[in-house]
Length: 361
Ligand code: SF4
Image (cartoon, rainbow, N blue to C red):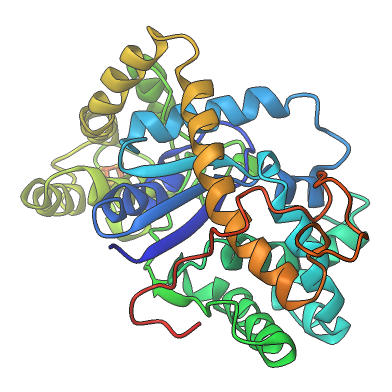
């Protein structure tokens, strides 16, 4: 039995090269070593975008299309939408009851994001509670590991703290997840700043080859290199940084030499980069073309994923509810009536979360 892992992405539009190298390639590699649950975090996206939900179904679809094109395989991992598994909301509510306010207020990204998104009305209960929902996501699947970057460690530590507090109050039910530290690549965008949708400087995984060429043609280079005969400084050039990720190492070494001696011009250098990026994206384009020939495939993948996710999440919620003496549907005192959607487990009562090997529960 492989250890279980949970990770998620918000459906905020088409994925780009930064998302691919920063997370998605790692997800694809992890499929064979872990029992992977990959979640479309649509509830999380409400914390900052609760007033813009009309395009949500389309964004969910486009995200999962990118996942499949990048090589996530529904036979080797579970892909599901967070809101399709009601247990996420239910466990978040229960964990919210035991989470001290000070814990969520001290999360470093809370104040940082409030500042970053000061134009939006996000001083909400939901936004403050983001880390509790995240804890529920992870703890529901008894995930042994969570792939995180250094900057997300405080979030994971809070999940571990919440699990410990729960287990202290109600008994050993929740599994404390370990961090699978990943060094996330940070790619420059076409304007030299970090590649990010909010800067409008991305090369999307779904861009056609011509679009990739066009975007790379417009990229910033070494600002000191004004004339073709000027010697370049590749270390400050975003085009060169992308070469490091997409062009074979021996060729990158030659580019560095030729840029510094002005033997290579920026136009040719960019043409070269476009070719390297398009070569890397070609397998994704081929898979995308196959998927697009099968209408309904994304929906089928997500529907099957939701069933598997509900089964795992329901087992944990059942144990949590029982530990908190809230499992009315299983009692004979007449409070519960028919199992309804409330706290009723969505799996049979005799189904329990399986402990992860090597983890104490
Ligand atoms: S030759 Fe390439 S690496 Fe050198 S400045 Fe031009 S684009 Fe950048």
